[in-house]
Length: 198
Image (cartoon, rainbow, N blue to C red; front, side, top):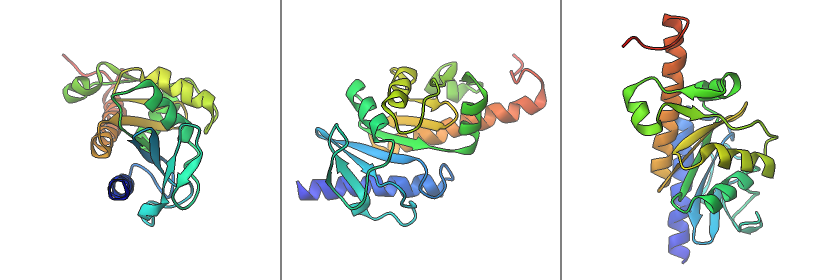
């Protein structure tokens, strides 16, 4: 168990570092988690990802109680726990504050997906959750509703959420969400509709 736990912690830590290196977060914003049996491993609150140690990936139960690890779990642990409870297929979650996706989450009721690859991944649009205060069960519920059975969604006035079978898969989806938002925002510069010609 200790070896499995150490490997799982390192997967979360390395994904969080890669998330920061990709420019999807700054400092300690956002978070990464991994389902670990009936428990959840999640990045610690307030620790910049470039400095995050494996033991600062916190093991919590479904009520947010810390079982092991150094520090306090991310304030958004409720959102992660709620997604895992709703989606048995989800084993990893990456929550970013990437610039274009966050701008879209501020300005749009849904993010139109305009490019072919994006449509394969996300369909016609990425939903935006109802706005609720950060770190609350109300936000967790709103995100679960917006995510539904998809690979990701935007969190109103807040950022983006991406899910997957592994932390690496969830991170790749988060990168694709940011790409889709950037392409939408860039396309708006070429015309008022932001819609490509047929």
